[in-house]
Structure formats: structure tokens, C-alpha cells
Amino acid sequence: MIIYLIFLFVLLALMVGAAIYSIMQKDLLYAVIGTGVISLVLSILFFILQAPDVALTEAAIGVALTTIIFIITIRNTVRYEDEHDRKENK
Image (cartoon, rainbow, N blue to C red):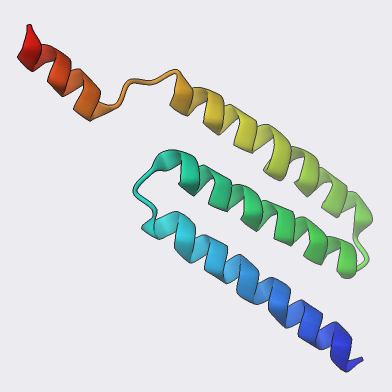
């Protein structure tokens, strides 16, 4: 029982740490990876709480789909600094 509680608190601490990391990160790609970690830990917590259907949905949507969409969006946009440098060079 005590091992279960320790594992639960470690997962919760990891989720809070990943949330703080995502908020404090300046690079958007690393922030998206942090939110993916949050979703992964959340899906593990749902599985531990005996909600496997919710855990699978969170893993599929939160970890995979949302993270991939954010990464594709970030790769297809231009950074403000890059755009500003291009205008100054012209």
C-alpha cells in the first residue's frame, strides 16, 4: 500500500514539474514536449485509477495527436526574430 502511494506521489510530482517546465520554457518545442509529458503521466494516473478507457483516450489524443499537431504547427511558422532579421537585411 505504501509503495502505491509513493508511486502516486512521484507521478504527481513529475506532472507538476513538467507543468512548471512547460510554463517557464522559452522555446515552444520544449514547452510542447513538456505538455506531452503531462498528458502521458495523466494517462498513467487514469490507468492506475482503473479508468482504462479514459487512459487510452488521453494517451491517443493528449500525447500523440495534440503533440504532433503542435509540433507541425511550430515547424510551419516563422519565428518573429527570423522575420525581423529578414526585413532589416532587405
